Image 1 (cartoon, helix red, strand yellow):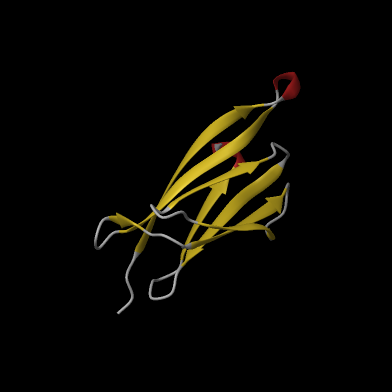
Image 2: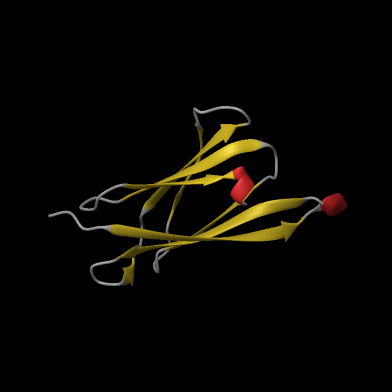
Length: 102
């Protein structure tokens, strides 16, 4: 039986030169059955350029021992970010964040 992942993401801003900011996305992957963080879970990030509906692979990261992850993204014009979270024995979950929501 496959378990279910729960992805919680928060957004923070990091200062940059001349008033511009970069995006800092902080997230946590939990096993909702046991309410604990999921270590060594793959988080694939895809980024769709402005006016595009097809995202390109941007980066793949792995959660820490507590299920946490952080990624810094330059503030350039893009349509959305897509996060695909996967781990053996669990259902894969996809979350999409649109630029307008950041």
